[in-house]
Length: 164
Image 1 (spheres, rainbow, N blue to C red):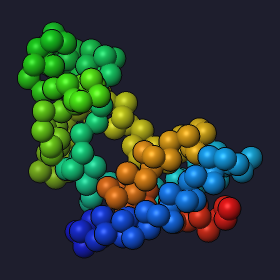
Image 2: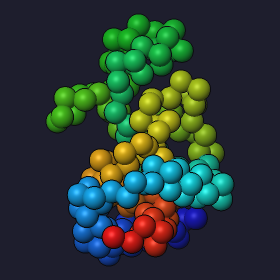
Image 3: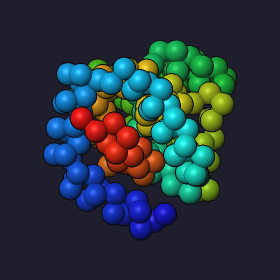
């Protein structure tokens, strides 16, 4: 897994132009069955992908925290939301709440999330490859293929299954 993660940024960069052209076409005319196919590809990939062996998303990027996330997680810690914000979060250039640093504060040494049951929505949905109207998040997907081996594999399979 370490070698896959190490090679992933270069592989994603090599495929970036190809993927961008593909997603540009996809935005203009998405196949009618795209949500069905993406769900199938997502499910198949995550049957064979063990996120605990990777956790690259948690090690290299931080999720956005919504107000609902902050309230839920601060309640879990028995803190006031502002205490949680002060202790763990900062506001980024887009005016969103994000972690003060990466790797994620809540990732333990064995790649388990210490707040898994109350984790942010962005974490629960990552890498977003099973989202409805998938074609609308192509810019996010282009970023995620460089972070998540499963997302990379899903996009490669998608291009084979739905040539444009």
